[in-house]
Every structure is written in structure tokens, then in C-alpha cells.
Length: 295
Image (cartoon, rainbow, N blue to C red; front, side, top):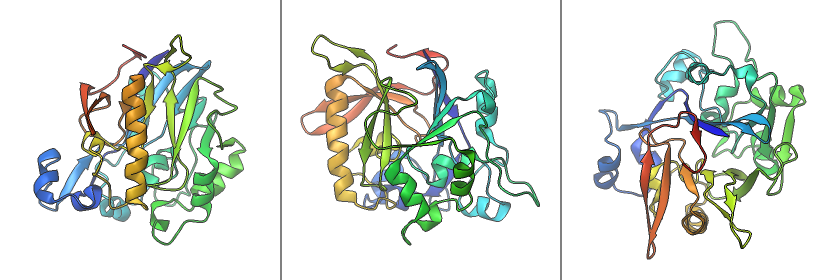
């Protein structure tokens, strides 16, 4: 199996919103803002092939579905559908994808499922041959969002996914589609049913998985958020998220599972280090190009 980091459309969002209660004097050293206080963010997907005999894409980024006014409001940098171009650079088209795994359905993680905006055209679902894996709770949240996060969802997306007949709602550690090759972990601090996908590595003599990779989604969007107290203003339950993050980071450090970051503009993959009660990263990798798991 080989792995590729697949860049989608990038964003510039308010640094204060992305770093919650962290003072600007601190977070601007991690990601310097522009004149409008916005920081650069990637919307990075992960491609794995063959995985359980399939070509699997983990998330799709924000895409290019927004009309120009909203594209500007949400700080989307590129007009074209960058994800599709990145897939082609890796040697794939969107109709080559057999499975799309979605941590949740916020538009910056699922918008790439849709074709690029065009004047007078209705939203159109891409990936015609893929099954879509989403947690049961995240699916229900997208269907009935809370007023606090209603703007984070794409109203047209759920009916299109339902009409495809290719949605698998996951409610346990393994899915029917991918079997035991991918183990799912769930988090509630950012949004209900956030689903973290772990591509399993080797199993040691005690039956413990080691050396795999965890798609950290919005539990840990990038290197600065590895620090336990750092949360986003978008998180629904920051204290719960910190507790969930501590448990995940402890587990990753213990089992030598690497972290894959979706929003870090400069780092796709890193190893988690634990020193006492503090966490950090090393072995940082900017991009993956046909990389073998564990190397």
C-alpha cells in the first residue's frame, strides 16, 4: 500500500477563531497572520491505494463549490478545484476512487465532493464509483444541525449523497466496506460523531497495533494543536475535546502511530512525542508521494 497527501483548496481564516483562547502574541509565532488577521490553512486529503483492495480517499477538502461572494467570505484562495488537480498529479481521477472516508460533513472537509461552482448550474456530486463512509452521528448532525454550526454544512450535499445510494453510516470501530484494515475512533468535542480513521500498521506479539497512521481531522488540525490547551473557537465542547485529545495523543505515542494533519499548511505527517504531560512532534514530513506505510 502507498500513501499520498492530496492538497485541496486552501483557506485563510481568522487566527483568533482558529486558536480559541490562545493569546495572539503566542499563536502568531506559530502561524503569522496577514493584515486581516487571517492565517493560512491547508485542506489536505490522504489517498491510500491499495487499501483493503481499494483506492481510498480520506476527506476531500473544501473544494470549489462556493459562488464567488461566499468564496471570498470564507477565505478560499483558489478558484479551480485543486483536489482534482492534485489527484491527477498522483496519477488518479476522481472516478478512480472506490471509497471516500469523511470525518464529518463540515464544508471544509466535505465540499470537495461537489463539482466546482458554475453560473446557472446546480450542485453536482463527484466520485461516481465511490462509497461514502461517515459516522452515524455525524450524518444526523448534518441533517439536523444546531444553530451554532448550521453555516458549516452544505444543505444540498445530504440529498445528493442520499440519492447516490452509496452511503455507509459507521457506528463502530470497523466498517463493512474496509473491514479491519481501518479502525475508527470517535470524538464529540468538535462536533458530534467526529470519526478519526486509523490505517492499521503491524501487530506486535501482544496483539497491539503499531506503526499505523491516524487521520486527525479537527481533533488535532495541525502541529500547534498538539499542545493540549489549544482548541478552536469552532469546537462545541473545548474541555471535552482536550480530554479526548489527551487520550488519543497518549495512545498514539504509546503505539507509535503517526499523525496526519489536514489543516497544517507545512506538515502532512509527524510522529507524536510525549514528555511527562506535554506532547510535541518530530519526524515532520511536508508531503507524501507514494510513501509506504511505516517508512
